[in-house]
Length: 222
Image (cartoon, rainbow, N blue to C red; front, side):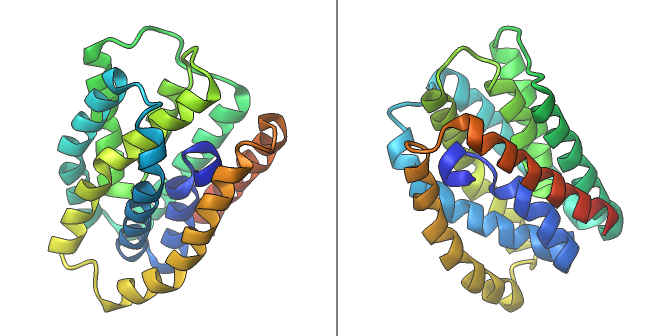
């Protein structure tokens, strides 16, 4: 999903890893994977992305991410896991409904959306949902949408791992899990990127939405 559409890593892995290991153990592993994936995809997206929109979004998100990390450290893990699951379910249903934001993109709104995304990134590992719904409303083609999302995620990927590392959440167990999962992700991302040029969006979309809803339901009700 991430290689194909430019998003999908966090919204699938955050609920699943939170269910398996709890948010404080699962979110740091997902953030480290997100960092590696962003490095893989960023070079090809730089020339296509709209920096006028993406840089304010990413900058605001980077500033707000540490505050979100404070939520990760302090909120009850079970409550946070269920919030993650419910949030992913709502996001998946909104995508399926076809709803999008259809207003303009002034600087103030870019900063507000970026701040919300940063709070979510630090606390749940998921910065994508508000930014995806916001950016996909534009008239740009799929290639520009994908590049914008890739560049946004890359701008906050490094910031998002600082708090878990300093807070001791990236321990040996987390590194072992990362070592097991990362090779699968590293192989899958370029495969998805190639499929973007082959598989029509109309065939990909139902599958992707089904995966999101299943991941959210697992974390919410599991």
